[in-house]
Image 1 (tube, one colour):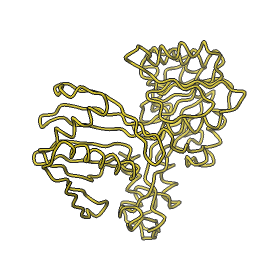
Image 2 (tube, rainbow, N blue to C red; image 1 turned 90 degrees about the horizontal axis):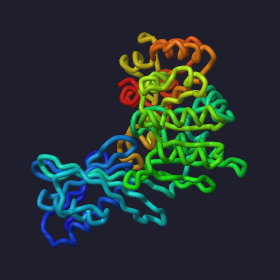
Image 3 (cartoon, one colour; image 1 turned 45 degrees about the vertical axis):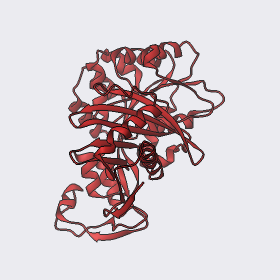
Amino acid sequence: MDNNYYETGKIGLNKLAAGGNDMQAADIVEDILSRAVKLHASDIHIEPLDQETRVRLRIDGLLQTVEQIASARHNSVISRLKVLCGMDIAEKRVPQDGRLDIIRNGRCIDLRISTLPTIRGEKAVIRILDKDGALLSLPQLDFSKANMQLYQDMYRAAHGIILITGPTGSGKSTTLYATLNELNTQEQNIITIEDPVEYKIPGINQVAVNQKTGLTFAKGLRAIVRQDPNIIMVGEIRDAETAQIAIQAALTGHLVLSTLHTNNAAGAITRLIDMGMEPFLLASAVRGVVAQRLVRRICPQCREEYEAQIWEKTCLNFPPDQPLVLQRGSGCEKCGFTGYLGRMAVQEVLPLTAQMAGLIMKQADEISLQAAAVQNGFTDLRQDGINKVMAGFTTCAELMRSVYS
């Protein structure tokens, strides 16, 4: 196989030539998977274009092109992936899903593949889950001191439901796993229902959703509440039935942790009401909500100071006529010349106070709930992000991309 590498200013771009026999498709797939794992990518995108097939990796939340494959090899690469993941190679007209476990550097890597027919051919996306990867602890999740205290008060409660919200890829599962790790003791019976199980935690009973056998979140949750649990983790509340069972479990003496897709913490309450949950039940069951986003960290190897521009001062609510020194990464080999290395969370923590419960009972809207929280000293996502930019952890550009957008 002819591999030609050149620099794109970030990471090397590998051009894979056409020709060869069927073994070349296997080599291409192996090259893609190995590179993705080495670069700690979370997703692989293999997408047919007019002149070639583009391979992009999602690294630290952003897609980067790393390989170009000759169009003549596209179908054989997709077929190779389908064979590995137990999918139908003859069916190219409908989407398919599959999975594969591989071993890299002694670690078990779970690959979830999804194919989608497009006008140029089948596009494949592979999600990479390192099931043996190291779990982060709560102190590593970048909560501010005040937010950490609020969150600890939530998860140390004997019962109630705690919700982690944010868009896909905002680190919700990581926060849940770190919390479960903190709560995992001999005296606690902890059971989870997940889709998929992303990390294996010793001492915790983890159940994987299986749509083919009918094991849904709702059905699994019904079974879990009959297993004498102290703590229940539901990977995601996707429908009214799951929400209803989770709230009932929280009201009957269980601590329930789960996730929702909402833009902010207050939006979780209105989302559940929209799903048909009674406000008086939410007021009694919900302990609090955490909303979060992920931003890239400034690379410690090439960190440098610079004078902030006007737009950055505006972003930070800083007086434009006063000097402000911020930090950024200049770009180096360690960070792939991006100026960033790794990611951190920006959070807002909304405890359900008596005042908030009263507003929920009155079916207050999201704006009213947010305003009431701010009056009580609530630090929203933007302010937490501003604090972390001023402290030199990340940049205004990251704040604008992840929080302001």
